[in-house]
Amino acid sequence: MTVITPVPRGWKRLGAKLVLFIFKHLPLTIVTQLAFIHFARWILVPGDGLPRLDPKQPKEDWPYDLYIFTTNFNGSWDQYIDAFGRIKSVSKGLNMLWYTSAGFPGPWPMRLFKRYIRYFEWPLDLYYNAYPGATVRDIETAVQLDSKLEAFLKNPIDEMSDEEFGRQYRAFLNEVGPFLGSTGYDAAPINLEHRARPLELGQ
Image (cartoon, rainbow, N blue to C red; front, side, top):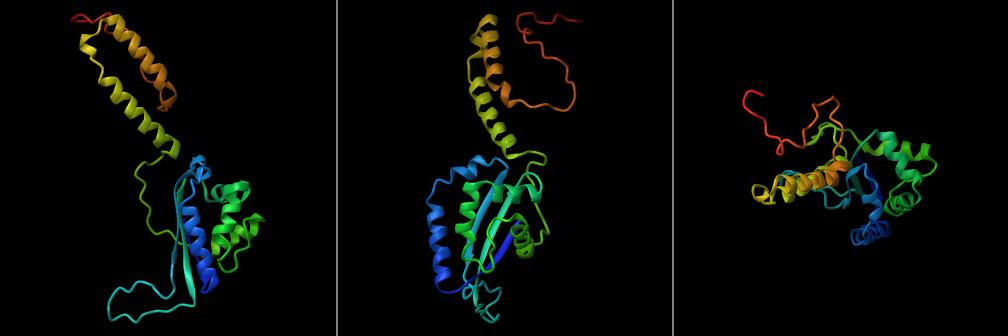
C-alpha cells in the first residue's frame, strides 16, 4: 500500500520534517511487535524539489509537499487499517506523522480514516512477493531455524557414539520444535533411532 498525502508548505513542512527526524531516532518497538508488518516507511518530497526525468522538462513548483507512506503487510487492507486505528500507541504515532497532511481526520472514527486513506492511496500496478504464503513470523522463524541447524551441523557427529548423537539430536529437535510448522499433509514418521539400528541390505 502506498499513500501520498499533500502537506502545505511553510510551518507544516518544518513540522513534518521534525516528526520524521524524531521517529527516525526512536526505537519504535511497537512496530516490531506488530508482526503483520513486513515494511513501513514515511518520506517527505518537497513540492519545489520534484525529480525531473529530462533536463528539458520544466521545473515544477507545487504549493504542497508530498508525504509518502509505503508499506507491505500480512492480511487484508481492512485488518491493517483497523490495527492502526484501534491500537492506542499506534494511533498516537499516526496523529503525529499525518497531523501536517491536509484534511487528515485522525485515526478515529475509522470510517473517516479509511475514506481518507482510500482517497490518497496510489493504485498498485505490480507487487513482488519473495516468500508467497509466508508471514513475517514465518520468515523470522525460518531464519532462526537455519542458524540453529547450522550450529547443530558443526558438531563432530562422526566422533560421537550413537547414544551421544541420539541425546544431542533429541535435544536439537526439542529446541527447534516450536519453529516447525505443519506441511499440510501427513508425512512419513521419522525414525530417530536409525543410527542405533542401521538398515541391513535388502531391508
